[in-house]
Image (cartoon, rainbow over all chains, first blue to last red; front, side, top):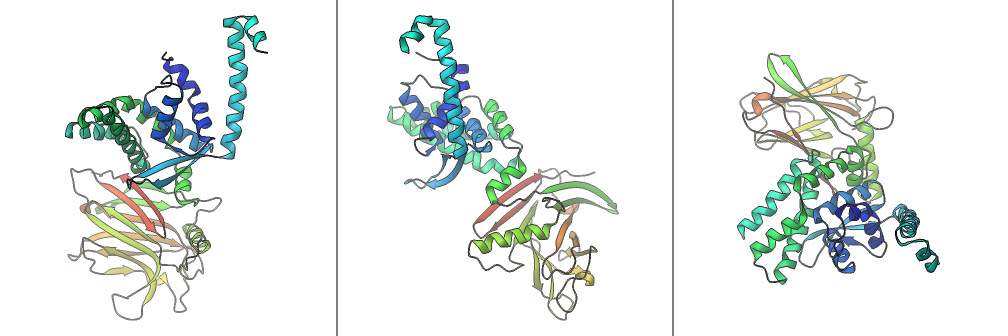
Length: 116
Length: 275
């Protein structure tokens, strides 16, 4: 199932921060990882990742550094900052509240109670 | 394959067309190119030809204009970007005006604002402190800037001993090297230094003119000098580029390059030609 682009767009930041909380990634790796883990649900236009990464970097949530690959290519890796980790926690919290509310409305009160 | 490569280059060019802060172009282009190349390899493993694989990789990137505009929003923060790049609080302001002095001159005013008073020498101190922290033994005069105007390249450097072109002792001053247009001589104001090696200008303007071998003025530089600093103290630089040095009808840029001690930055500013 493909998910609406706008829906993915809104949560891209959280997805990226979440991946980067595990280890450092470079751009293309993030795309592949998101596609693999979501069974290609999160296939969005790949270039749109970079404005997101650069925004997160400008906001101090990420830092970047260059590292040479075995092929000799200089890759730009991103690493999450403490501020980024805090932001991730806040976004996870928001997501949990939001998705819980959506589930209660869409799937009925019983669904949420059943989960609890 | 060339078609595929062309698609990659066209995509990157189109993205960069929307990013006004040219300082970051190299970094963005490198990141996008790496992505497309790696994505191409992925599609080739899936059995596509190299050309088809690269075309798919470029398609997967999305709309270049949309991406360029989105990147442009994130690459306007001059101070922030420079800080990230150089770890120094440095800002460069360049102003182009026209001086009606018989010749047409494009005037570049270049100064480095910090908190409070805007003093380039303080920024120089910051450079030097930073380098010293990193274990370098830096002397004034070892900070070089390179400026390219059209096909001419100028290197200038603050606070070094230069040979007096008119004979006499070596003097503390500023020198300009014209790599492509051999420097004939330099004129400068004697107020620039005093015998004990201290600058005594106290806010006065000092300056020099550089001429090419034909005696044409190429760069006229005027600096305001701080008081009583040995080997430092320039806090404003005005550089006038002779419009004759600019190739008419072509896109001309002034490129500021700082390259030394593991720090590199490059700033390209389109040069308006004044009529």
